[in-house]
Image (cartoon, rainbow, N blue to C red; front, side, top):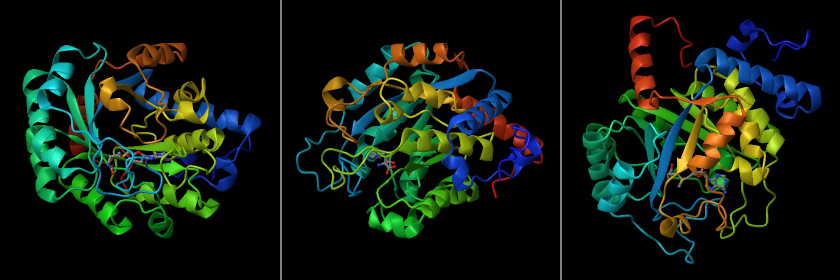
Length: 357
Ligand code: SAM
């Protein structure tokens, strides 16, 4: 419960913080205080710095069929593509913005792209650049996870998507809920920094199902977690459903920050679809400390269809101006280096940080 008697949130309470539904639905002054407190908790942990990474979306082939995702295998209207190693290497080695310290290589669930493109690309980037490397490639076999790690990737982004197992099944999310969670645990045990996440506002998400996301997140061995607003994708079975409420999404981000002050929490680009013009900047005000510049070449981007064909692209200019407008600054330390140093410190002082329950 959030301690609000005096209008303040104490750190003793934050250590055991778990949201209730009234917090997630809060509005007006209570909501303002919630966001301010989340922002100041992030400031205490990370200062003004925000990690700045680039994403490249390298394949839209996907063997999964998630009801909410435009890249689902049943979407026959999509021109499927796989990028070429040379093109991606050249882009990231010679044409990435200077402010970028890390790269996230993302794809539909496409093991062929992992083998033929991602593993060689990770090796090239580690050899030619100082970029930290994250990957977001879905549920793969353990051998591919090991090969990615040996190539030099250190962060695996794998959202659990939905905390409630029945809701996960209803939404045809990847594989089974159990399998997704086992993969998250296995990746963490293998030494990856695992960042997960969930979607707010999905059709069929009751209050208890929403809260199940927080309960699951706090029990997983994570380094970070995202909150994405549900965006009804044009070419999905959910196209006629309503978009997630921005306030519920932002309140969930703030609650996540209070629940886990030390996590890396991104501001996702979809915030600007949930509230055009201001959603993203409001996300930076709820304690988010990671932003992503999209570097996918435009000829591929249009077919990397998560939501709508008309995408809101986070360019370097948009990102840097949003950060500056919120009084934040880009981190010069990479996310990968931050995790590396933190893990070393935790190995020396295991009691200094909250344990992953
Ligand atoms: N295939 C990989 C995987 O399974 O982790 C990579 C990520 S997948 C291409 C992109 C992510 O976008 C999903 O994890 C999902 O959470 C999110 N996503 C897809 N469609 C969405 C929608 N309509 N609204 C909100 N988030 C969505």
